[in-house]
Length: 380
Image (cartoon, rainbow, N blue to C red; front, side, top):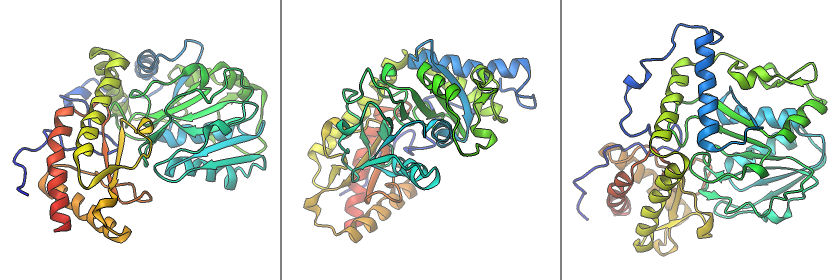
């Protein structure tokens, strides 16, 4: 087939760090408090602004604590697991790379003996109804490397005794989160709002705060994981005093993304933009003779990390699929049509297209003919 003539205005479709908001430039960072201590009054207020704007856009309940923590979403979820697990049995649900990583943390690092693991292959979900409300539960809301999301919250008991730990890094700002059913929620700046990496966010319900104050884990905690002082939650962490030094450039960029989110209509608009991107790809997949969704059940398809595989009709072996995927991504990169859309290194061969709210649907639509061209070139 002929090479397309039109290219996406923004060819950045990486699943993290993700595309910047439409119209973003370095001018957005002019107000950054560089060269100032993050403990200074004005700098601390800027960090607190990120917290308050995040709570407003996401609709986080007023009685939940929310703070900026080190090391992106990984740091946020790990400090929660290491600080609060062990008080009771835990159920781990995993269906992709990062969820499997939290299983490794709990089984091989924390070495919890009362740990049940429910896993599924890429493209599917484990049986979430196996969750025991008397036990803690750890899961990702959206599988960033598999494109499989949790379709609903009906499996989480309202009257649970255990805590729910939800890694929501590629779901926050793009999918509705049932805050009343989530006790510990983590995400990072680099996903749906296109912020810079290395900083995480942590939200805690009153029940999670109670756990922190009434349970002391039997293992030592490094400084960047410590959220209590003298048996009480360190409230300063959730009032702009970060555990370690943040980048004030990144803080300014986070404020910019959150301001943009509010200006365009808040969470409903963010979710609608992400859904429009998934809808555009779904319409194309329905007509494709080579592409298919990695997510088996349509209701579990992610509207952010949209993962595609090669359809059975292509007749490609696993080795051939890996080679075709590699060649396609190289061709698209060389043409400046799409950057960083190869499937995650441990996921099945295919493509992963970020569809979060900062990505314009017009760019998704312009990308799709390029995918057909690249496939034809790669198998030809």
